[in-house]
Length: 262
Ligand SMILES: O=C(O)c1cc(=O)[nH]c(=O)n1[C@@H]1O[C@H](COP(=O)(O)O)[C@@H](O)[C@H]1O
Image (cartoon, rainbow, N blue to C red; front, side, top):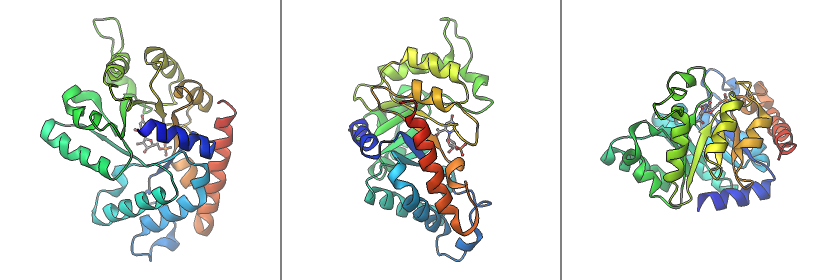
């Protein structure tokens, strides 16, 4: 069960920090350019420097969707597993049944995934039926346009994101469902926690997006289990030769700050 494994990792690392691995090509240190797979060279150094502070790694699939990227992703997943750190692939998937079944095969390789609820329950069944994996359903996202659709008020007098939280609670038949709720809107974060008291959250938006770390921890954890993610704030904390050292320091700092609120 993913959330049991995650809970154990949170205890071992004494950390709820998810380290995002989003290798923006414009920001990769120049000295890695000569490597066969610069993104893998980058991720390996980041993992070496941060793993003792990481409850999980969250590569966003967008940064790996080309042949070298797929190779780099495969390497970094195996490397993170070698350090006993689970990997949550941020892919925001969902599709009609036979396509979703193929998307869900990635859960043979990674431990958890983000999915979007827009296509409804059947589009998520191939993920939800994976009792061994974690499935994080987008609920209230951290971006400025997160309110465009997700805050819409339904005829039932609830917001769309509240409905998603309610539905996802019903989808949690195998104790494998979490919600993605951004740290940039703490009021909504609090509200989602009221609607879904038992689901662990993945809370992105701390760091580069300026989200609220205290609210992220206060509302993000269910029975001590949940994740607060920072990507650029850690991996691009420093530039040049010592980028990994800076990332390690940033991860340690954020872990400690989050622990103040646990
Ligand atoms: O699903 C996500 O992880 C996600 C949801 C959301 O609402 N907001 C959000 O920023 N994310 C992801 O979390 C990461 C945030 O990166 P930083 O802003 O660099 O910390 C990116 O990979 C985003 O795609």
